Image 1: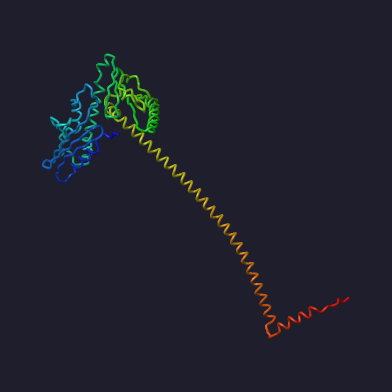
Image 2: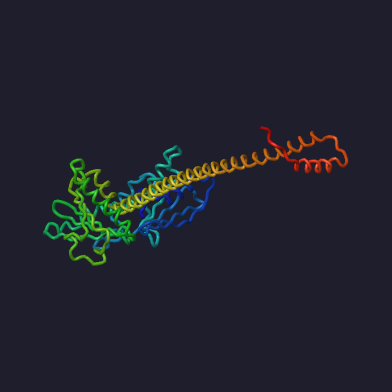
Length: 366
Protein backbone atom coordinates (compact mmCIF):
# COMPACT_ATOMS: atom_id res chain seq x y z
CA UNK A 1 0.00 0.00 0.00
CA UNK A 2 1.24 3.47 -0.82
CA UNK A 3 2.53 5.79 1.85
CA UNK A 4 -0.15 8.48 2.32
CA UNK A 5 2.39 10.93 3.72
CA UNK A 6 4.07 13.23 1.24
CA UNK A 7 7.59 12.72 2.61
CA UNK A 8 9.56 9.50 2.27
CA UNK A 9 10.21 8.08 5.77
CA UNK A 10 13.34 6.16 4.72
CA UNK A 11 14.85 9.10 2.86
CA UNK A 12 14.09 11.41 5.78
CA UNK A 13 15.82 9.04 8.21
CA UNK A 14 19.00 8.86 6.11
CA UNK A 15 19.19 12.64 5.65
CA UNK A 16 18.71 13.20 9.38
CA UNK A 17 21.47 10.69 10.11
CA UNK A 18 23.77 12.47 7.68
CA UNK A 19 22.97 15.90 9.13
CA UNK A 20 23.31 14.86 12.80
CA UNK A 21 26.61 13.01 12.34
CA UNK A 22 29.30 14.47 14.58
CA UNK A 23 32.06 13.19 12.31
CA UNK A 24 32.13 13.28 8.54
CA UNK A 25 30.79 10.03 7.14
CA UNK A 26 30.62 8.57 3.65
CA UNK A 27 27.25 7.36 2.35
CA UNK A 28 26.41 5.55 -0.86
CA UNK A 29 22.90 4.19 -0.37
CA UNK A 30 20.07 2.99 -2.67
CA UNK A 31 16.42 3.08 -1.65
CA UNK A 32 13.43 1.45 -3.37
CA UNK A 33 9.89 2.48 -2.49
CA UNK A 34 6.29 2.20 -3.61
CA UNK A 35 5.58 2.77 -7.28
CA UNK A 36 9.02 1.63 -8.56
CA UNK A 37 10.68 4.69 -7.05
CA UNK A 38 14.46 4.58 -6.58
CA UNK A 39 16.65 6.96 -4.56
CA UNK A 40 20.45 7.17 -4.58
CA UNK A 41 22.10 9.18 -1.79
CA UNK A 42 25.81 9.97 -1.98
CA UNK A 43 28.02 11.86 0.44
CA UNK A 44 31.82 11.86 0.64
CA UNK A 45 33.84 12.19 3.81
CA UNK A 46 36.13 14.74 2.12
CA UNK A 47 33.19 17.11 1.54
CA UNK A 48 30.59 16.47 4.28
CA UNK A 49 28.70 19.72 3.64
CA UNK A 50 27.43 18.53 0.24
CA UNK A 51 25.22 15.51 -0.55
CA UNK A 52 23.80 14.32 -3.86
CA UNK A 53 20.29 12.89 -4.19
CA UNK A 54 19.28 11.16 -7.43
CA UNK A 55 15.73 9.98 -8.05
CA UNK A 56 14.07 7.77 -10.64
CA UNK A 57 10.30 7.51 -10.81
CA UNK A 58 8.13 6.16 -13.65
CA UNK A 59 5.82 8.71 -15.30
CA UNK A 60 2.12 8.62 -14.62
CA UNK A 61 1.23 8.65 -18.29
CA UNK A 62 3.02 6.64 -20.98
CA UNK A 63 1.37 8.34 -23.93
CA UNK A 64 2.47 11.37 -25.89
CA UNK A 65 3.98 13.13 -22.88
CA UNK A 66 7.80 13.03 -22.70
CA UNK A 67 9.43 10.77 -20.15
CA UNK A 68 11.81 13.53 -19.06
CA UNK A 69 10.72 16.02 -16.45
CA UNK A 70 8.94 19.05 -17.81
CA UNK A 71 10.05 22.63 -17.05
CA UNK A 72 6.98 23.02 -14.85
CA UNK A 73 8.00 20.01 -12.74
CA UNK A 74 11.59 21.25 -12.47
CA UNK A 75 10.38 24.64 -11.25
CA UNK A 76 8.19 22.93 -8.65
CA UNK A 77 11.21 20.93 -7.42
CA UNK A 78 13.32 24.08 -7.18
CA UNK A 79 10.63 25.66 -5.03
CA UNK A 80 11.06 23.05 -2.27
CA UNK A 81 14.08 24.78 -0.68
CA UNK A 82 15.51 27.41 -3.07
CA UNK A 83 18.68 28.15 -1.07
CA UNK A 84 19.44 24.55 -0.22
CA UNK A 85 18.52 22.51 -3.32
CA UNK A 86 20.30 22.84 -6.66
CA UNK A 87 19.54 20.79 -9.78
CA UNK A 88 22.54 19.09 -11.34
CA UNK A 89 22.73 19.08 -15.13
CA UNK A 90 22.82 16.50 -16.53
CA UNK A 91 21.31 13.98 -14.11
CA UNK A 92 23.23 10.88 -13.08
CA UNK A 93 22.95 7.91 -15.43
CA UNK A 94 19.78 5.90 -14.88
CA UNK A 95 17.98 8.69 -13.01
CA UNK A 96 15.64 11.45 -14.07
CA UNK A 97 16.77 14.04 -11.59
CA UNK A 98 19.86 14.72 -9.45
CA UNK A 99 19.81 17.27 -6.64
CA UNK A 100 22.78 18.87 -4.92
CA UNK A 101 22.00 19.42 -1.24
CA UNK A 102 23.95 22.15 0.55
CA UNK A 103 23.77 20.84 4.10
CA UNK A 104 25.49 23.92 5.53
CA UNK A 105 22.40 25.95 4.56
CA UNK A 106 20.15 23.93 6.87
CA UNK A 107 19.33 25.94 10.01
CA UNK A 108 20.81 24.74 13.30
CA UNK A 109 17.66 25.32 15.32
CA UNK A 110 14.61 23.10 15.59
CA UNK A 111 13.52 23.96 12.03
CA UNK A 112 16.07 21.60 10.49
CA UNK A 113 13.66 18.66 10.86
CA UNK A 114 11.01 20.53 8.87
CA UNK A 115 13.53 21.45 6.15
CA UNK A 116 14.74 17.84 5.77
CA UNK A 117 11.12 16.63 5.68
CA UNK A 118 10.43 19.06 2.83
CA UNK A 119 13.41 17.66 0.89
CA UNK A 120 12.01 14.14 1.41
CA UNK A 121 8.84 15.15 -0.49
CA UNK A 122 10.64 15.44 -3.82
CA UNK A 123 8.98 12.30 -5.29
CA UNK A 124 5.47 13.43 -4.33
CA UNK A 125 6.22 16.86 -5.83
CA UNK A 126 7.23 15.25 -9.15
CA UNK A 127 4.15 12.99 -9.35
CA UNK A 128 1.77 15.78 -8.30
CA UNK A 129 3.24 18.13 -10.89
CA UNK A 130 2.72 15.54 -13.63
CA UNK A 131 -0.93 15.07 -12.69
CA UNK A 132 -1.47 18.84 -12.52
CA UNK A 133 -0.16 19.19 -16.07
CA UNK A 134 -2.40 16.33 -17.22
CA UNK A 135 -5.50 17.90 -15.69
CA UNK A 136 -4.75 21.30 -17.16
CA UNK A 137 -3.37 20.48 -20.62
CA UNK A 138 -3.91 16.91 -21.85
CA UNK A 139 -6.82 16.30 -24.23
CA UNK A 140 -7.54 20.01 -24.54
CA UNK A 141 -7.53 19.69 -28.35
CA UNK A 142 -9.80 16.64 -28.30
CA UNK A 143 -12.20 18.34 -25.88
CA UNK A 144 -12.51 21.34 -28.15
CA UNK A 145 -13.51 18.98 -30.98
CA UNK A 146 -16.04 17.12 -28.82
CA UNK A 147 -13.81 14.04 -28.43
CA UNK A 148 -13.12 12.83 -24.89
CA UNK A 149 -10.56 10.09 -24.64
CA UNK A 150 -9.78 8.51 -21.27
CA UNK A 151 -6.20 8.87 -20.06
CA UNK A 152 -4.82 5.87 -18.23
CA UNK A 153 -2.63 6.90 -15.29
CA UNK A 154 -0.48 4.36 -13.47
CA UNK A 155 0.67 5.35 -10.00
CA UNK A 156 1.07 1.66 -9.12
CA UNK A 157 1.29 -1.15 -11.69
CA UNK A 158 -1.72 -2.95 -10.18
CA UNK A 159 -3.81 0.17 -9.47
CA UNK A 160 -4.36 2.27 -12.63
CA UNK A 161 -7.05 4.94 -12.84
CA UNK A 162 -8.52 7.02 -15.67
CA UNK A 163 -9.01 10.73 -16.20
CA UNK A 164 -11.42 12.09 -18.84
CA UNK A 165 -11.28 15.82 -19.49
CA UNK A 166 -14.51 17.33 -20.81
CA UNK A 167 -15.69 20.87 -21.49
CA UNK A 168 -17.35 21.54 -18.14
CA UNK A 169 -15.76 18.92 -15.89
CA UNK A 170 -13.07 16.30 -15.38
CA UNK A 171 -14.09 12.72 -14.58
CA UNK A 172 -11.74 10.52 -12.55
CA UNK A 173 -12.60 6.79 -12.58
CA UNK A 174 -10.98 4.23 -10.28
CA UNK A 175 -11.31 0.48 -10.99
CA UNK A 176 -11.23 -1.31 -7.63
CA UNK A 177 -9.65 -4.75 -7.19
CA UNK A 178 -9.19 -6.90 -4.11
CA UNK A 179 -7.77 -10.36 -3.53
CA UNK A 180 -10.15 -11.40 -0.75
CA UNK A 181 -13.94 -11.49 -0.97
CA UNK A 182 -14.30 -10.13 2.54
CA UNK A 183 -12.42 -6.98 1.46
CA UNK A 184 -14.85 -6.54 -1.42
CA UNK A 185 -17.81 -6.62 0.98
CA UNK A 186 -16.27 -3.98 3.24
CA UNK A 187 -15.25 -1.77 0.30
CA UNK A 188 -18.72 -2.00 -1.28
CA UNK A 189 -20.35 -0.85 1.95
CA UNK A 190 -17.80 1.97 2.19
CA UNK A 191 -18.49 3.14 -1.38
CA UNK A 192 -22.24 3.16 -0.84
CA UNK A 193 -21.79 5.24 2.29
CA UNK A 194 -19.36 7.53 0.45
CA UNK A 195 -21.90 8.12 -2.32
CA UNK A 196 -24.70 8.91 0.14
CA UNK A 197 -22.58 11.29 2.22
CA UNK A 198 -20.81 12.91 -0.74
CA UNK A 199 -24.08 13.75 -2.47
CA UNK A 200 -25.71 15.22 0.64
CA UNK A 201 -26.31 18.95 1.14
CA UNK A 202 -23.62 19.18 3.79
CA UNK A 203 -20.90 18.22 1.31
CA UNK A 204 -22.21 20.04 -1.73
CA UNK A 205 -18.81 21.67 -2.37
CA UNK A 206 -16.98 18.35 -2.71
CA UNK A 207 -16.78 16.49 -6.06
CA UNK A 208 -19.89 14.30 -6.58
CA UNK A 209 -19.17 10.60 -6.26
CA UNK A 210 -20.79 7.60 -7.95
CA UNK A 211 -20.21 3.87 -7.72
CA UNK A 212 -21.10 1.22 -10.27
CA UNK A 213 -20.52 -2.51 -10.43
CA UNK A 214 -20.13 -2.34 -14.21
CA UNK A 215 -17.75 -0.14 -16.25
CA UNK A 216 -19.12 3.37 -16.90
CA UNK A 217 -19.79 4.36 -20.51
CA UNK A 218 -16.78 6.73 -20.51
CA UNK A 219 -14.46 3.67 -20.52
CA UNK A 220 -15.93 2.10 -23.64
CA UNK A 221 -13.18 0.68 -25.81
CA UNK A 222 -10.59 0.26 -23.06
CA UNK A 223 -8.64 -2.95 -22.59
CA UNK A 224 -10.48 -5.83 -20.96
CA UNK A 225 -7.77 -6.33 -18.33
CA UNK A 226 -8.34 -2.74 -17.12
CA UNK A 227 -12.11 -3.24 -16.88
CA UNK A 228 -12.13 -6.62 -15.10
CA UNK A 229 -12.65 -5.82 -11.43
CA UNK A 230 -14.41 -7.33 -8.42
CA UNK A 231 -14.96 -4.10 -6.47
CA UNK A 232 -16.68 -2.00 -9.14
CA UNK A 233 -15.82 1.49 -10.37
CA UNK A 234 -15.74 4.72 -8.36
CA UNK A 235 -16.13 7.99 -10.29
CA UNK A 236 -15.59 11.62 -9.23
CA UNK A 237 -16.88 14.62 -11.14
CA UNK A 238 -14.30 17.39 -10.74
CA UNK A 239 -15.41 20.86 -11.74
CA UNK A 240 -13.30 23.93 -12.43
CA UNK A 241 -13.59 25.26 -8.89
CA UNK A 242 -11.88 22.12 -7.53
CA UNK A 243 -8.67 22.81 -9.48
CA UNK A 244 -8.35 26.52 -8.89
CA UNK A 245 -5.69 28.08 -6.68
CA UNK A 246 -4.68 26.12 -3.60
CA UNK A 247 -7.44 23.55 -4.18
CA UNK A 248 -5.56 22.05 -7.10
CA UNK A 249 -2.78 20.61 -4.94
CA UNK A 250 -5.25 19.05 -2.49
CA UNK A 251 -7.41 17.59 -5.28
CA UNK A 252 -4.38 16.09 -7.03
CA UNK A 253 -3.04 14.50 -3.84
CA UNK A 254 -6.45 13.00 -2.99
CA UNK A 255 -6.71 11.48 -6.46
CA UNK A 256 -3.23 9.95 -6.25
CA UNK A 257 -3.91 8.38 -2.87
CA UNK A 258 -7.55 7.35 -3.27
CA UNK A 259 -6.69 3.66 -3.66
CA UNK A 260 -4.35 3.85 -0.68
CA UNK A 261 -7.08 5.46 1.44
CA UNK A 262 -9.59 2.79 0.43
CA UNK A 263 -7.22 -0.03 1.35
CA UNK A 264 -6.35 1.68 4.60
CA UNK A 265 -10.06 1.95 5.44
CA UNK A 266 -10.63 -1.73 4.60
CA UNK A 267 -7.65 -2.78 6.72
CA UNK A 268 -8.78 -0.64 9.65
CA UNK A 269 -12.33 -1.99 9.40
CA UNK A 270 -11.07 -5.57 9.42
CA UNK A 271 -8.96 -4.81 12.47
CA UNK A 272 -11.96 -3.22 14.21
CA UNK A 273 -14.17 -6.22 13.41
CA UNK A 274 -11.52 -8.63 14.66
CA UNK A 275 -11.13 -6.67 17.90
CA UNK A 276 -14.90 -6.68 18.42
CA UNK A 277 -15.11 -10.41 17.72
CA UNK A 278 -12.19 -11.08 20.06
CA UNK A 279 -13.83 -8.95 22.77
CA UNK A 280 -17.14 -10.71 22.30
CA UNK A 281 -15.42 -14.09 22.46
CA UNK A 282 -13.71 -13.07 25.69
CA UNK A 283 -17.07 -12.02 27.14
CA UNK A 284 -18.64 -15.35 26.14
CA UNK A 285 -15.72 -17.26 27.65
CA UNK A 286 -16.06 -15.22 30.82
CA UNK A 287 -19.77 -16.04 31.01
CA UNK A 288 -19.01 -19.72 30.49
CA UNK A 289 -16.37 -19.58 33.22
CA UNK A 290 -18.85 -17.93 35.58
CA UNK A 291 -21.43 -20.59 34.77
CA UNK A 292 -18.90 -23.36 35.34
CA UNK A 293 -17.76 -21.82 38.60
CA UNK A 294 -21.37 -21.55 39.79
CA UNK A 295 -22.00 -25.16 38.84
CA UNK A 296 -18.83 -26.21 40.64
CA UNK A 297 -19.89 -24.30 43.76
CA UNK A 298 -23.35 -25.87 43.64
CA UNK A 299 -21.77 -29.32 43.25
CA UNK A 300 -19.50 -28.64 46.21
CA UNK A 301 -22.46 -27.53 48.32
CA UNK A 302 -24.42 -30.66 47.40
CA UNK A 303 -21.40 -32.82 48.22
CA UNK A 304 -20.98 -31.04 51.51
CA UNK A 305 -24.65 -31.63 52.32
CA UNK A 306 -24.32 -35.34 51.47
CA UNK A 307 -21.16 -35.54 53.49
CA UNK A 308 -22.93 -33.86 56.40
CA UNK A 309 -25.78 -36.37 56.23
CA UNK A 310 -23.35 -39.25 56.06
CA UNK A 311 -21.41 -37.92 59.02
CA UNK A 312 -24.68 -37.53 60.96
CA UNK A 313 -25.64 -41.13 60.21
CA UNK A 314 -22.20 -42.30 61.23
CA UNK A 315 -22.48 -40.29 64.44
CA UNK A 316 -25.90 -41.86 65.27
CA UNK A 317 -24.58 -45.32 64.52
CA UNK A 318 -21.47 -44.79 66.57
CA UNK A 319 -23.52 -43.35 69.45
CA UNK A 320 -25.83 -46.39 69.48
CA UNK A 321 -22.86 -48.72 69.49
CA UNK A 322 -21.26 -46.71 72.26
CA UNK A 323 -24.43 -46.82 74.37
CA UNK A 324 -24.72 -50.56 73.97
CA UNK A 325 -21.10 -50.97 74.91
CA UNK A 326 -21.55 -48.76 77.93
CA UNK A 327 -24.66 -50.68 79.11
CA UNK A 328 -22.79 -53.97 78.72
CA UNK A 329 -19.85 -52.62 80.71
CA UNK A 330 -22.20 -51.28 83.39
CA UNK A 331 -23.95 -54.66 83.71
CA UNK A 332 -20.64 -56.39 84.15
CA UNK A 333 -19.65 -53.89 86.83
CA UNK A 334 -22.94 -54.46 88.69
CA UNK A 335 -22.38 -58.17 88.59
CA UNK A 336 -18.90 -57.69 89.90
CA UNK A 337 -20.20 -55.48 92.73
CA UNK A 338 -22.85 -58.07 93.74
CA UNK A 339 -20.30 -60.89 94.01
CA UNK A 340 -17.12 -59.24 95.19
CA UNK A 341 -16.31 -62.16 97.60
CA UNK A 342 -15.42 -65.12 95.52
CA UNK A 343 -15.60 -68.51 97.31
CA UNK A 344 -14.31 -71.58 95.60
CA UNK A 345 -17.17 -73.92 94.80
CA UNK A 346 -19.85 -71.33 95.59
CA UNK A 347 -20.81 -70.91 91.97
CA UNK A 348 -21.42 -74.65 91.60
CA UNK A 349 -23.41 -74.70 94.88
CA UNK A 350 -25.56 -71.76 93.70
CA UNK A 351 -26.36 -73.47 90.41
CA UNK A 352 -27.42 -76.68 92.19
CA UNK A 353 -29.54 -74.77 94.71
CA UNK A 354 -31.37 -72.88 91.97
CA UNK A 355 -32.09 -76.15 90.21
CA UNK A 356 -33.63 -77.71 93.38
CA UNK A 357 -35.75 -74.72 94.21
CA UNK A 358 -36.98 -74.43 90.67
CA UNK A 359 -38.44 -77.95 90.94
CA UNK A 360 -40.47 -77.06 94.16
CA UNK A 361 -44.19 -76.48 93.55
CA UNK A 362 -46.08 -73.72 95.21
CA UNK A 363 -49.84 -73.57 95.88
CA UNK A 364 -51.78 -70.44 95.38
CA UNK A 365 -53.33 -69.01 98.47
CA UNK A 366 -56.94 -68.15 98.22
